[in-house]
Image (tube, rainbow, N blue to C red; front, side, top):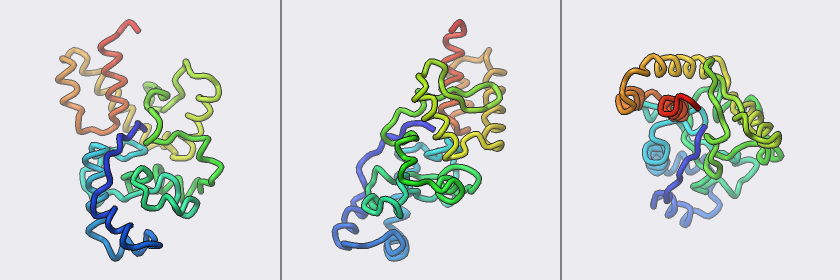
Length: 209
């Protein structure tokens, strides 16, 4: 997970909300389908660089994603159409958005315990070990470490599938250590897991640290 730099909402969404006071997400999804698709496309491509906002899986087909409410709309109904609350996520039920809502069953009191990918520089708190597991960065205080652990739990970010893919990527990057940094970055630019790539590039640039 890494911070998402949100831009301005699409004009059609703003207009829809202004003209449809009291509208809910279901009616929006059905009656303003083109607007929904425009929102999803802009968020996924322009704000998230085609990465799932929670797992950093590369999403190559728009239809493999959906718009998730980071703050669940049934708990925070006033956040339903707030642009900063909309995150493009994969459709997987084993981790990410669907896991947060349907398996972990997040509650209002859990939100202060986890990182917000829009508000927090999440990637600066995480470390990816050589097995592809996410850990709290070693220098963190206990409170921050617990927040990392809870975030991992809520989104199931150490699911075996994610861990395995990150482990493979780390190994492949390290196997390319003799290449120029620019070549490595280009080779893995479409592989997803941008935070893993950033970490490994930093290690390659500073091998003694």
